Length: 364
Image 1 (tube, rainbow, N blue to C red):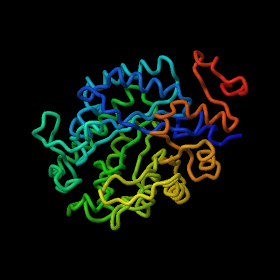
Image 2 (image 1 turned 90 degrees about the vertical axis):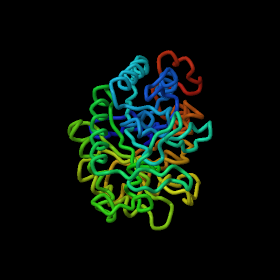
Image 3 (image 1 turned 60 degrees about the vertical axis):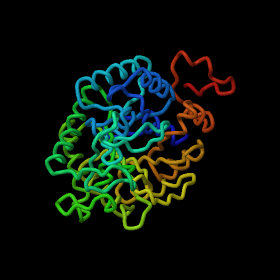
């Protein structure tokens, strides 16, 4: 039997298989509100046969968006828009859906990628003042971020908790806290972005403080039985930055608090990062965190083939694999993987007739 197509539990949430759709920004929201594009996009992915769909990075406050086209969940209007999208998607799919709550920090206020993706100055019609642990821009020439005061840090922590309450009310099945890819929480973790000399900077304990405080705030808001996980960048891929050793120690702290899963990525914090791209290039990070903490881990990054994903789960390097660009390219990747591995996958009744004649049990 294929391990990739065996059930997996994330806390109290049981997935049919170990294929996760990673959060992928669409830059197509209207002032934080999901649109018909999201109904179509997420509806398509919800027919893929994956075990879990995590919707794109969802900002907990307007200033936390990467671009002016990002999805948010900070008020009644953004919540109502997401409710309509979820209703549309769930009317034809019972796939579990999670939300990734996020704040972009100094990497916010940008143009949409297909329009250049450059940072926008606060005075631009689609820009705003960005914030960060310290007044250190992502790139030379970018607008200088405002160093967060402790009162603003407290507001952002509360914003994560408030968005978590809205997430539960909307019926999301789990929450992933975004602490990766150079966004705000990762900025606190890395000494390259965090130059503070108060209790939120300097030592490992101080740099990880906001991540643990946000986890605690979210957990308090949703209760002990609700699945809450985190996504991290295991390394900055830059000397003297955040690295895998620190990631393991952070994972141990989160595991002790009852964190239900950890989604292991890397990079995004520093423009001088040197990433050795290749198949499975981030899997060793997930494997080490799993081995040293026992946490349920999700591996992501250039996992493209069914046999490759099967090997990761079969050997226990990670409990699940996540797909991003690959499932945009092939929205039926789980079907094709199940066919390759001799497994079964769920399909909507409207699609049952497309089962190949040589795969009589593909759809169960």
